[in-house]
Image (cartoon, rainbow, N blue to C red):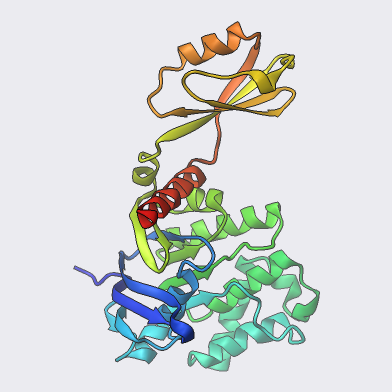
Length: 313
């Protein structure tokens, strides 16, 4: 059997003042996976990436990349990883092509290899006509593409993405999603951290949720979603209700969104006909119904609330 793309065992990290970065995290990711790491700010996501990519000093535990120990074989491990950081960290006054070629030189590519690889990536990522332009004038979306090109120049087997679509517009975000799906289809293993839960649900086949430096949930995306206790229904009205704020349901919680839209939270498995009957009896004329597309966000918040309740106990 091939080694896991990522094998993290009993990983721990503390910062000055005693703040916990990670507290005994173990995580294995198989080759070819599109894996999402989710958690609130300060949960430990960036710390885990820093240890995975050797940007932070290892204190306790082991990290292996395709079987190579990050502490004992740092060069071999690093060659297998491409990192797209959350913050833009290239020299904005250098031309786009030079930024990518310079990164290739860091990984031992000859000038000819670096130029050829840069040409390939600029063509694939839509940067070809910006190759000689300084990075200063790029939009946020194209800066993200440049970060991705730089991370891919040495053809890594593992791509690590820390909030790759933060601050980019909707069109650029969807373009990046397509690029990432193509890379994964080509065999690149991807580890993604994101605050956009829609992004994780759309892209990732497996997920782990981290909070307080610990993994609190792990599984396939569908498996985690099946753990939802509630579902949110969006009810579209043919005409506004007279007093929507006074409407209450016996089997759910109702929230008016606007004059023509209600949201209803009901426990999963609830028979919906009685809910519709109550709405109709209150004067609602239902024009449409759909499940709200934030299932992963709902499950994510449920797990954090459950953990908070356990901590309080």
